[in-house]
Length: 261
Image (tube, rainbow, N blue to C red; front, top):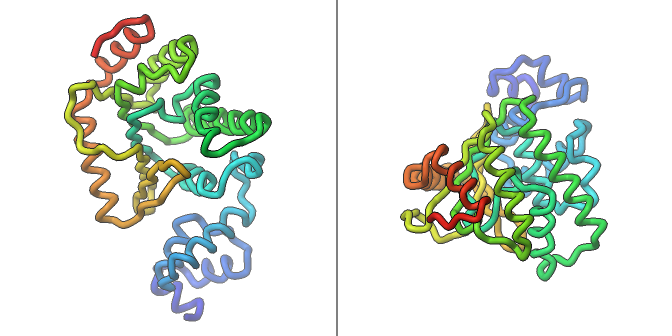
């Protein structure tokens, strides 16, 4: 398909196509998605193209950490950087964007039996997490995090009660941010899944996707029907969880040593 025909099909000007073809204009993620759909690119081709796109010139906050982050993690970060909202279900630990440095270190060390890494790598990954949190939640960009956390995650010390207490205090403080919507699922609340955690990302101009956090990494779900299923599941979780105010009270109570449900 020649450039003029592609422009007509996409509703673009021929000049825009020409500028992209001759590298005078850097395309957006939406532009690349549109082109892949137009040319009916196979999944493997799409993955390769987006890999090239990531490395083609735009500097991302995580570029300096590429050497210590796995490829699936980089894909998540690339998508996340374009998102306007994340929905997170976390049944076992505190969501990554809301972790303290010490708590995140314990989580990473807990993965050592599965993925042994050097202490220097752990340190760099902790730096990357701090940069990620700042990029998304410092108030400088239109990004919202909505998270539902099972109460058992708030009680799991990971071997250090002081670290958990500090984490809960931080969590209560973060729940006051205009960018954060946090709810706690109480022990007795019914919920729709026994599967592991997931992250639903919504974009301004692209279809939503879901990432499933599995023991050896992450898996992308882009099928529209399956994504809608996760949206319904998250809506139900929000409906049966404590509201934001009661969730904050519970977190503070647990930070002080309380045993409320």
